Image (cartoon, rainbow, N blue to C red):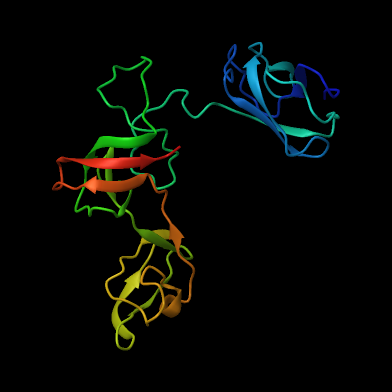
Length: 228
């Protein structure tokens, strides 16, 4: 809880593990339900220790806008640049940016989020086409694809567009799996849209930017980053 204008928020932790001193410093606390919902505040510090059902005072940068009550629910989250590491191919990873030089562990560095950057290439890239995090090579990018969400273990027959849809061999998909677009669907439908013949919506992967100058796989290409 906290009155409007307060410089700190009193929270009751809803987890078992203790917090480290200033673990969420430079991160955020946002109100996700009840009074004060929809507001976010920068965290400037807090004590350590405690655990589930422990009360803590979270110091914030700007004053509370709407008063919080004991029914208000808030979430603490770290800054996305806190404790970054190399991605390991999870398509849902939060990408902070690109390190322009090699960085030893436990060191600070400048993280590039926009503009031309030299990045490891996996597979074929194309000038002007979007790029995403590679799911096969850690720390690399690959050409932007789309995925179709399906029920886990579902199977069926794929229809590919062209002069007329045609069946291809039976497939079995995981919960989320890349489906390559091999033919154009019916004109004048956008060739990147699969819903004309798949019956399901498509979800674009996280766009990191676009390729300026492609090389070949395992070499470094020039990418224009659009992360910020």
